[in-house]
Length: 87
Image (cartoon, rainbow, N blue to C red; front, side, top):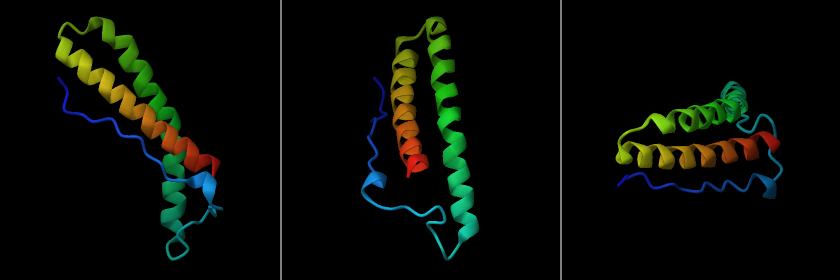
């Protein structure tokens, strides 16, 4: 049994006007964090695809369960990054 607890992340981006440079005291950090969100959407999708392809090879049920939980958590991360990118 996995110890990973899949959590939904709600940042309420759609409830507020989020400026592109959301940290005016450190615009470089805003730009870097925005870039990470843009890249993370695709990266997390690739992680889920890779685990889905590898799952039939898992001989250990515990490893398969951990992989499922990890994929669900990555899906939540991807959703949060998509919300950030849309905002």
